[in-house]
Image 1 (cartoon, rainbow, N blue to C red):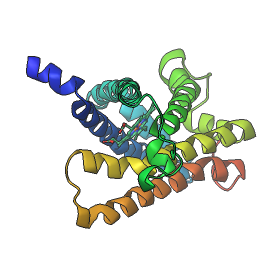
Image 2: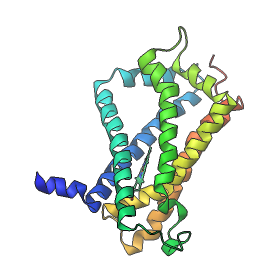
Image 3: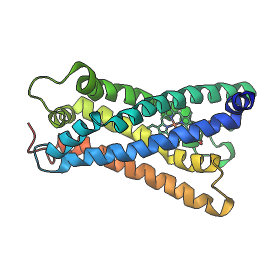
Image 4: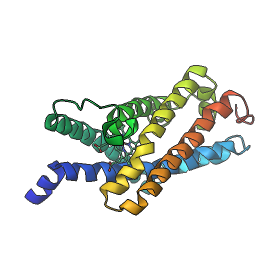
Length: 225
Ligand code: HEM
C-alpha cells in the first residue's frame, strides 16, 4: 500500500498517471470523431441519432463513461500537482525560457493548452451532454438537429474551432510525451514519434474542425431540421 502511495506521489508516478489517462482520452477522441462522422450521412441524422441513443442504453458504454469522467478529473488534478511540484523544484524561471533546450512552446506549456481544452470540454458538455442526458431535449428535437443548430451559430462555431485548435496544440506534444513516459521511445524512433504526434494533432484538428465549417456553410446537414 505504502509502495503504491509513494509511486503515485512521486514525479514519475504522476507522469505515468498523466500518460495513461491521456492515452485513454486519445482513444475516446477517436471514438467521438467516428460517432460525429455519422452526421455526414444524408439520412436525416438517423445513423448519428441511433448511435448516440444506443451508447446511452449500453451498460458497457455507461461504465466506460464513468472511467472517462474519472480520467479527465485525474488528468487535470495530476497536471496541477505536477505543475506545482515543478515550480517548487525550480522557483526561478529559466532566463532563456522561450527556447529552453530546444523544447517547443507547446511542450513547455501543456498546462496552458490543457486549461483551454478544459474550458472547451466544460462548454461542450454544457451545450450537448446536459440537455441530451440530464435536462432533456426540447420536444421533437433530435440530437443531430441540435448539433446542426449549434454549428450554424457563428459564435459557437468559432469557439468550437478555437477549442479544437488548443486541443491540437496539446496533442502535438502529448502522444510523443506519453510514449516517452511509458518507455517505448528510444533515440532512433524519436523523430518518428514527433512526426506521429504532430500528424495525429493535425488529423484531429481537421476532423473536428470540419463539423463547424461544413455545417456553418450549409455544405453538410441539408437533410436535418
Ligand atoms: C481530450 C483531452 C486531453 C487529452 C487527449 C490529453 C492528453 C495528454 C497526454 C497524452 C499527455 C502526455 C502525458 C505524458 O507526458 O506522459 C498530456 C499531458 C498533459 N496534459 Fe493533457 N490531455 C487532455 C486534456 C488536458 C486537460 C483538460 C488538461 C488541464 C489542465 C491537461 C493538462 C496536461 C498537462 C499539464 C500535461 C503535461 C504533464 C507533464 O508532463 O508535466 N490535459 N495530455
